[in-house]
Image 1 (cartoon, rainbow over the protein chains, first blue to last red):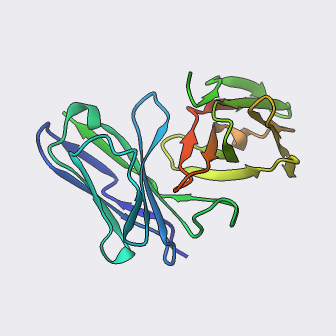
Image 2: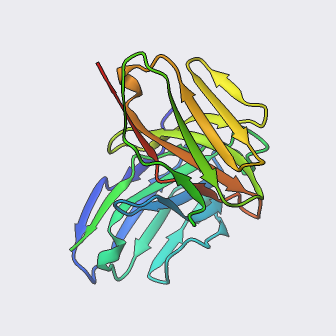
Length: 118
Length: 111
């Protein structure tokens, strides 16, 4: 079974440009999460989709970030315009169950996209 | 105060040693607790969930102390392959069960 995939693996862009990250979750997983890890900091939650609906987007830094999950399959995270502080590793994760009480609560992470804004 | 705190280490131990990590959390409403393992420049992977009664998986034992608001991970008979960063993850109740990650504890097991 294929795991969570993310594209691209690396992206280097200039300040002010636009970048779109893509995540393909494990087939059949309704829950999709985006996270970001800034160098030297902990992994931070950005948002959570259940199918195509945004369940929680409280972690999105500002309105330069737009996430979509049309059709409830893959998701995209667009940063427009990119700023220097957006640099970091963006992880996507998917899970089958929403509540940790329903299952082990395991989230399967993708390999991440390393974004560098210069 | 950070929501989830971990000693960043590194913990430098010889093969065969026993090592323990602690993680404290600030939200008393936290409901679920996990240890993830992250190898260098790789994605986090679930190591084990932490149950109220404590649980063991081979050489790994996880404990939860709700009164003091901390969880622990004990690794016995350390292997070279155990070298990694161990992330403490705590999830609180709410609409989305948002996981909160610690910064991780680095473990280096040397021959």
